[in-house]
Image (tube, rainbow over all chains, first blue to last red; front, side, top):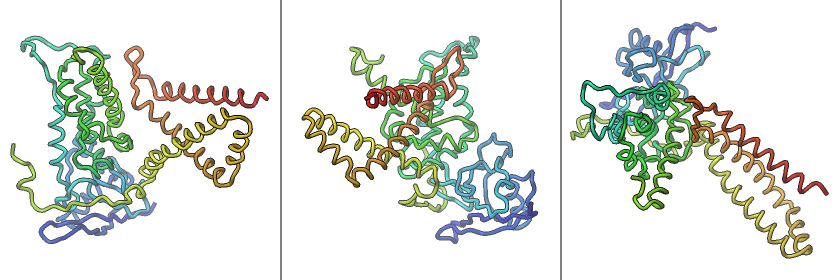
Length: 246
Length: 135
């Protein structure tokens, strides 16, 4: 194994640059190092102006999503040795505006996330001293979707979102589904109006790459297809039953 | 609500290339999967034409068979066979994503959903082959 590897890193300074360029850095290649370690090495020893987001270094905070050799990855979980002998190209997440170097503007996702109402909606709240009991089976129904860490790799992998920025996108829909499947929640009909819009689930063409890149096995593509089935059933009910799907 | 992007500095907005689907094999596979619908439609049209020829008597059916043997149709149908096969395989593999079946509180594994699809496909194909080839 060679003891050094080259990183080609996107650089963009909004004050001076019209468009991003690539800078090359040579860093030590250690078997326990992930791409994020290499970026921190560059920042500490080679160029202190390199800008990127990171926090937990353990796949929990969802901050360090970038494009590594063309594929959306959490850089804290992407080992350098898998790319030896290199070079490794590290770019910002695709489909988002670039603010500086490897930092992207995630505002659009946050607006969409809020629209899908990812919280428990109750028609009548129970008194504070009463609990909402849940069986292991009821927990199992939504647990997978609750693992989302909002890293937005699914948005970076989704060509539909890249081509149509109005599309709600994978994580927002998966998180809506997380609450729809929760036995304590009563807000499914509120979310249906938002998600069954053509910019919601029907925008998805099932490329499926959101699920492939998800570091937490959330399976947003599956959530969207299941939601399409639910929305279709609701539509049929509204058509056939005299009082719709109420 | 305050627009969260209002106070942000200038940013670079990359444009998605027209040829985005050539950049990664997974995207190309998706485009091929979508394009396969055209060949599935062609196969349906061809089958309908075949049934029509069959109802119009032996002479017409012989003409139809001759047309099927022409190099152009043969080439088209070879490509169609590949795409119909590709369409079926990708469709069956994706079916497990859209169908969540729980037995005893546990989600059935993907194979339990795709497996019967493949089995049904093999059974129907074998049944049709038997009807056509028994003499």
